[in-house]
Length: 375
Image (cartoon, rainbow, N blue to C red; front, side, top):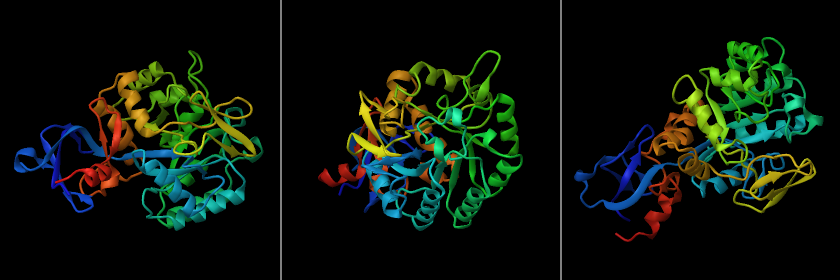
């Protein structure tokens, strides 16, 4: 085992820094130190960074959470994404029947603390029919006491929870009730007006789910969810695969926000990431078609992309600096769920550290590099 690596640049969770070496202590990283203090450190081209943090992962490795809402299903999804550079995920359950929600709740509590599983994302079922996307209309329903009780149970067990809902699917005070549990309430799959969004934010909503997709658009006399999101000081996730949102609009949205660090990447990944090119959802076949995941109606049904691919696209196609792209893929999502340790590079398992080339393209995990590099 080599004692340390000296990359061209090291992302420490805040900044890209030159001139540092990263000690390796068994199967974990040590604290970065000046390169001059470790002359035996092996030079390595590119960037070392903590693994990515993805708050919207429906599936991976051939496993869909809705079909396998179990601790083993969550572990399999996390493992599939870890191989592709994502160290921590929120397994994401999209709109489904109440019993599936119950099983996912049980699974998230049982899986608390398991490697790579940072909590649970409930995307629906309390959304707008008009903006449901591929979510099954039969299961869409207003926010109810059952879901609120499940969120309370998750939070009491110490599970981080992100709930995507439409403000118009909630009665007055319900968003405040959810937010009071410590859950992150995210606005998405919504046809709300900008005024309705502002009211939801005032009640405690604190995030937006996949900006632009499945939400009322920005029009010059009706700002909608998109306009209210862009104008807010609340973080918003965005899918950067060149399909869900045009690259120019990704850059425009980032520049339009009133402060830095208000945009973060999500993959919205489905089982085809690290798995077969098709799967079943609600008894429909979903398949990859020229990089797009489509259902039998021809609608987009999640994404066939990774956080690593999204980071590279932010740099190559959107034109962002690598440091900004890494903050969007690591620092900001970790902050959104209150897990700053996920953005730290010291004290991490080697398979939770990624190596990127100078253009921020993923080339492998530090565990692979350390295992195949002679002293």
